Image (cartoon, rainbow over all chains, first blue to last red; front, side, top):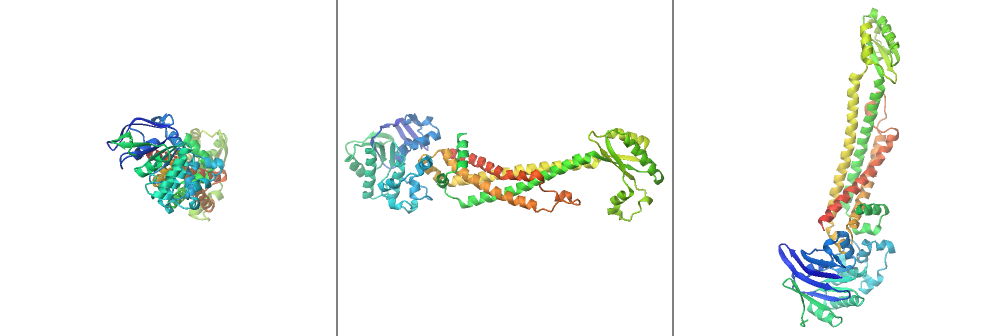
Length: 225
Length: 301
């Protein structure tokens, strides 16, 4: 599904990732951990074509990302739901339109005449906030809204970059439950986090693999997690 | 090419949702609208100038080219004889449709603006004028001039070329100037729309990043901007064209005494020509925004 083969990524003359080989199989659940600045976000961005590797190969759904044009990468992003660290939204649109944005840009709004998002809003507990503008939302609401937007296209893969970074423990557990639910629906999930408590809580619910970035390389985390 | 096709379809069909993804930008919108309206207004005037000049060039070039004048400059006692001799020559000259000597009253009317209406023309050595109208084949001017020189020494043939050619040339230049002005106005509109579109795209880099994150293609993003700017240019130019045409309509009507200045308007089917201005502006905005979007989106990749 998503496969890295001896991938390196350099930025500003320094190598951030080196010789990274990893495979995200369909239906798998992965954590990506490591200290701040270790390259977690960079690796996530490589997973949906926002960055191109400086060496090695990144294969997205069987295609080498280097051989894809921008439209093909856009198509890949419709199959990869991303919950970004800073939860980017269009601040002039109400929440319900922000969540439906992937449908809008893919033309499915026009085909379906506007999909009923109430079920999805209810799933993430934002039914009563659908008309709010993004700046009016709390950190937790923004994270849940980002998750709803990431899954609205029923993607094959869900990438979440520090999804619990700005929320309290209760909210992080709630988000985690949603992600586990998605995985049980057959979605591949990759979560970048340095929250070890979150990882431990998840491992109690689902079989998760923990990848750690150390010294620019990926390592399979040990029993300490 | 695919982006162009997508943009054309989107422009035609419209998409309320797609229109909303780009935040409204009041200042840029008003700027584009105003620029398009102003440019269309100026373009209408440039077209009016060009078409009117063209008309004048045609009139001077075609109508005056078919007329000539003979001045018979002779002592008063020989003037009638030389005039008759010149008319006889003209009767046998190929290419002359008609020729007649102007009457005293007609010559008096010609001189009246300078000497007054009660001029005693018989008492003055005023040349007798013969008006010649050529047929469609035209006459041999040089041949006629030689015959007149031999048989009517006081006759001077003037086929108007001396003053007609500079006028025709000036009118043709004015026509060219009008078209060049129109092209420059359209190019200025393209430059303004490009700048406005570029500013709008740069100001919305964050919006573009979000759209890309959720799977928007460059064509989709470009289309949202193209549609917005094209419709603004079309609307502004339609308004500017309407006001421009109204202003032309309200110009004083053509009169014999001031035909050149008061003739600067549209006549007949020429009234249809300015109607292309809004569509031309829309097309220019479509192309300019498309090019700006492609360049900016490539830079933001």
